[in-house]
Length: 292
Image (cartoon, rainbow, N blue to C red; front, side, top):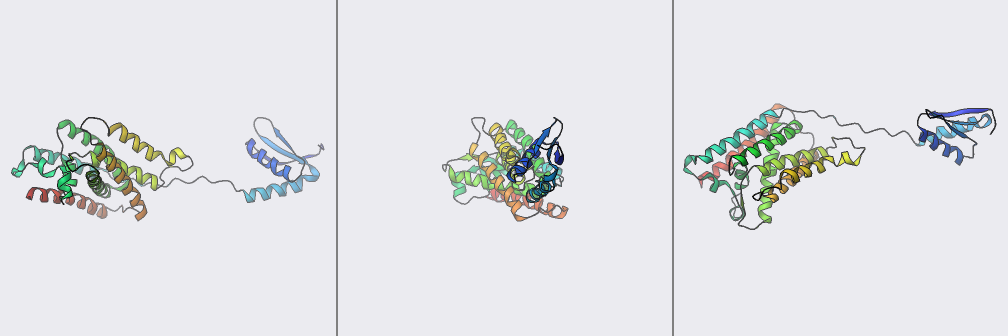
């Protein structure tokens, strides 16, 4: 190659130089790639430098550098009112049911009963979420409910999050009842707990709130949600795996639906209204249950 050489491209990225060397080769322009370990340069004979620069400019125009997708900005909200409400409602019902207040057997009136739900007693899909067999059952659902409720509340706001959780969990209980034999009976907030987990996973995944440049980030919320479901929701001989799974699935679908419906309202009035509706659903379900 002629000793009178001109540098037409320089980069610390050797691959960038190699790509442009292919461009020059395709254009039959004599060239040489020099790499000293710190940077790489492309040189061509002086008489070919103008044409080489032109070819490389055309290449750059046709292949602009890929711009990384910007992370969507997440405005975290106050999750405290929702988890406090959850804690209060679950503990209050535990106390009321334990002492058979109003002279009713709360467990008989509020538990999931496949046959009765199929006959129209829809409220059992909600009331069963607030009943627990013993202190261990109660404490476990309180801990995980508060944990996942914080995640959901931070993303969606306390009111919207818990309204979505109650609706998703009730739907999960309904579908689980339809899929199992009519004699199926169950109680516990665990369906709501996994609905909260699914809600977060669906909302984060569908809303693309994580970096999208790697598949592990794209599907991380789904994989993480299913891993937690497998780890915390499938143990114990009395575990209702179907309710846990369907609670997660319904929560996941609700999270995606909220993204599709548009921005979640963040103002206090909207959140308070949604939270009030969630409480009203639980209260109404129990009023109907105890009047029978």
